[in-house]
Length: 430
Image (cartoon, rainbow, N blue to C red):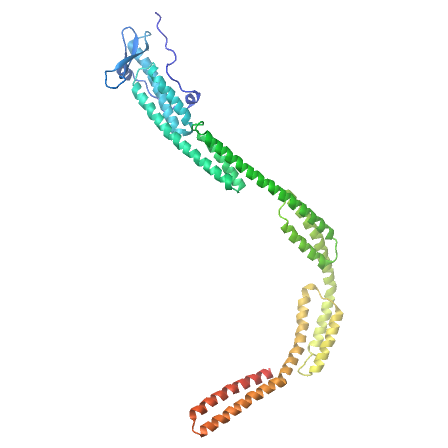
C-alpha cells in the first residue's frame, strides 16, 4: 500500500470573507497535546479520544485517518498542526468579532460551520475545548447582534425624526447620508433587519420628498421675485433721466421699498438685477447731485448778498429805541431778503437762524410791552394788593381788641397775598 500524502485539511472551512480576515492570534501546534488526545496504532490508524456522549461513561475513540508516511512522532506532529490550524481559525473569528462587530453575521455563520465540522475533523487535540470556545463565540455573537440591532433601531428612529420635522436641509441632508453610511456599515443579520431597512428607506424618501418640495416652492418664490424685480428695474430705468428731482427721488424710495418686499431671487439673478437697479438710481442721483452743485455755486452769491443785508440791518433794528421803526426796517429787510433768492442747501438753516434772530428781537420786545400794559394783568395786581390792604386792616383791628392770635393769622394771610401781588407785577414787567 502506498503511504497517503497529506491533503487538504478536512472539516468545516470559513467562507471567503472569513479567510480574508486578518489573523490576530496564531495557535502553535503541540505534539504533547496531540498525544494527550489521541494516538496512532501499530497499523497506522489515527485515533482521536472523545468523551462519552452522556459525559459520565468512559472515553471513546474516533478514527480520524491513517498515517504511514513516517514515524509515529511525525504523524502526531502532522495531526497536531491540523488541530493548530483549526484552532487558529477559531481565534481569528474571535478577533474579527472584537474588531469588526459589523461582521457579526459572517462570523456567526463561519463559527457554526466550524462547530458543525468538529465531529468529522481529522485532527488530534482538545476538540472539546474548541467546541466550548465556539459555543462562547456564538453566544457573544448573539449579544453583539442584539447591540447592532439596537443601534440600527436608533438610526431608524433618528432618520424618521429628521424625515418628519427636519428643516435645516443642508445639515439634515448630510445627517441622513451619514446615517445611511452607518447603516450600511453596521452589519448584522440583514434578513432580520429587513423591516428596519424598509423603515429607513421610507424615512429617507420622505425627507428627500419634503426637501424636494421645499426647494421646488423656493424656486417658484425666486422666479416670482425675479419677475417682480425685473419690473422694478424697468421702472427705475424709465426714471433715471428725470429732472423732477423731488418727485422722482420719492418714486425711487418707493421702488426701493417694493424691492425689499419682493423677496430674494436666485443669487445670479439677484446680483444682476440689483446692479441694473442701482445703475438707474446712480444715473438719476448723480445728475441731481451735479445740478445741486451747479445751483449751490450760483446760490453762493445770494448768500453773500443776504449776509450783507444782515450786517446792514442788525444794528439798525432796535425795538427798544423805536419799536415802530424797528418793525418797518424788519419788513424792509424781509422784502429784500426774499428778492435775493435761494442760498446753498448746506447754508439754508444758517441763514434762517440769522434772520429768525432779528425777527424774534422785534416780536419778543412787542410781547414784553404787551404784557407790561395788559389791563387784565394790571387789574390782577391791583386786586391782590387790595386784598393785602384789607387783611392788614383787619389784623390791626384784631390787635386793638386784644385778639392777638387772630391778628397773627390775618397778617400771615396778608403776607401770602402780598407775595402773589409781587409775582404778578414781576411777570408783567418781564
